[in-house]
Length: 212
Length: 196
Image (tube, each protein chain N blue to C red):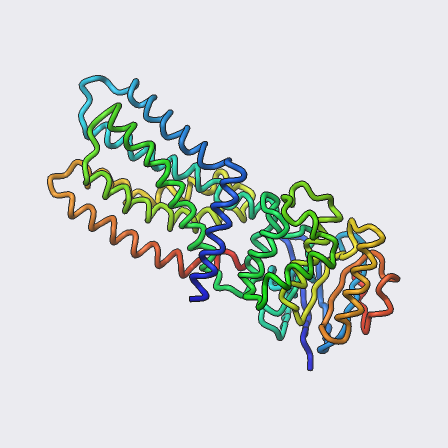
């Protein structure tokens, strides 16, 4: 129970920081809506549903990247990560709390993005909503680990997308597949499997990322 | 019993060697005074003792779990968007401090931060941030205190508070203190290390 109390304290802190600084969520919201508007005008009127679905997933991926780039900014700028790492709590609690924060911000961005997609492109079906929820879990899990790695690097702006984008290709494959295929269940299962594997790997390896 | 033991300890940052062939032992209740010019490796040594850095040469053993260590760095290691109270509450939860609210209240009172406890740390002066950092360090009653320039930014009153803390904990806890003003704390020191 102590572990989850630590996670709750850290996650609450992340939400509070965002409510105070408002430097991540508004940027994510603005970006995802702007991207969908640009895609709306750049796609020909007779474009297929598959094309618009692909563009939606690109927008969601880069929105996640935008949030992840800021995920450890407070800790990095003020070296607070050192203070957190020194605390006797399990270091994976830092990862889990930060992932929950990223997940919450992504969720809020998508609450705006999906109706906007429905407005500009295609109606939003249950397959798309399920795929987005499952994809968010994987994006937050992997992305938070990579954001912590990048935060320790001088070339963080370059390193994060270089590591993140190749690793989340399966999320795009699963997400697009679940939305356009006749049998979305297979792709949703694939996304769930990705989430489980990468969440466990990220949870177990975070300790080594923050320790020198 | 020895709390800190270093054998041929060295640390490099790329091609730059900051510490080399350092041997030292600090017993329980010992007070290690670390002096030296800028860039001599004082902060690096304390970071190694805290476990934030790993040695690149030799060995360093600190015979305490990290939850029993209090580390005062150059930065206060607190969130500037949170208030003093919120920062200490977070650390109190993570260190599982018993009677957290009472302990935090007593520390804030002692270090003159009770009145501005709800203000964001970003609005604090350097001296106030250093006071808050000292509250953070003492919150969990550490057995090993690693203090890197504890007097930085403090006015005369707060300097006296640090002296009181050192007097109170000297002998009870083990200390490693890096400072440019060794005369101020030489009376507490049981051993000293001058880095070149």
